[in-house]
Image 1 (cartoon, each protein chain N blue to C red):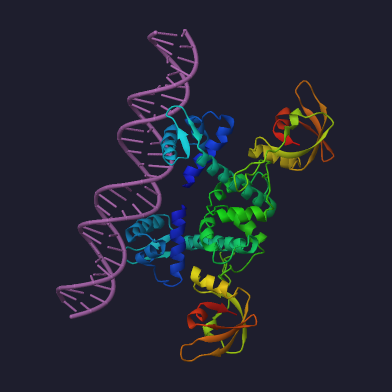
Image 2 (spheres, helix red, strand yellow):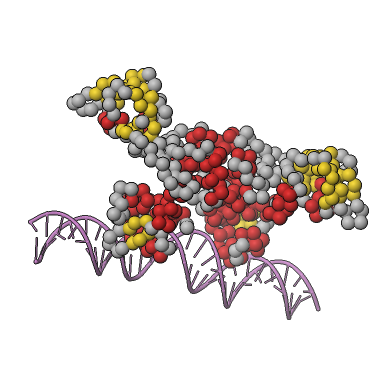
Length: 215
Length: 215
DNA sequence: AAATAAATTTAGTTATACCTAAAATATTAT
DNA sequence: ATAATATTTTAGGTATAACTAAATTTATTT
């Protein structure tokens, strides 16, 4: 697989999680910042390689082979993110772009040795699960902070939207994976929350609470 | 720079060390397993980008800009090799191919953080020097085992030819970087050596001794 | 059910990095 | 010095992965 093919497979995988009945050409084009016609070209190629099943005008789904490839790419991406944060000291808003390159390094031996070196982590720095060598993904029990009961303590385990702005906001507020969070008060008018994070009181908007996963 | 351009720059750099007056088109083609005509195409492109100075029919040399780029690629290659051996437990004959891919990962921050994580090594697992962030290469004092005085102890610090066969031979004989070597006897007829390596006696051919650097 | 709009595909073009075959230049041998 | 040989470049062509513009198919209105 070329890097380009891998990027398509990865995007189709992520979009499949939202629309499992078939992924649109335009949706793929949007994610890859390319044109619909380019996507059509590539879908034919991926179909010829039996990585996707493609019906003209009706979108694509991954084949078993394609699904496995996708999981291996996601596995690599997330393991490298763990490496960058845990071993090299990057912050979690800096690692995505670099992992986008590292995920295309081919050696299977490398991935598995990296996995062992990192202690077989089950989630990346954003809290997203890491498929194991066979492609099995451990489900992580999680709730959005906006939905949890009041006055109960939770651990921060991930983010929903991992945009740079949001991650930088979390950094600024010293909210990290593992932080202990408790909702102290909920404002019914605009759903603003008053929370205690690692002991400190903080007022956060509903939009923020709706992007933070806790356990 | 594309990956292909980087590979050309790297090869021109290595060939420059042997023929500093100008590198031949055919020599480059040989190293990259491509055709002379393809090399000519690329030399024009690299010349347009001011990475090489190229005169038709008379080969190329790197410009200052090209030389710096080359050193940064070599730096990345060798740092990743150290990572693969020291941190992930690869043996020194397995790492070259993987480092060929890793050397093209772009982030400068990544390289420098990796360098720090590895403790600013000055040589890779084959004993080749690692350029620092500014491109400065520390000269390593070294002699070939075939040329050293008899009954004096040395440390094995590198190899000249790093072909897989040779590295595997060294592995088999338990010769590694850091091994203590002493030439006990020299056969004048065929230059076969009887050596002591980490205390054990071993007979090695002149060809082997001619590929091992000691200090 | 036809008309309009949106999404998708086809057809034809471009740039990269490679190729072969032929032409041009440089080197070596006589 | 010229002929023979080796090296390098030019010219023209291929596959990949993108593009634009036009045509086709599907979905939505009226």
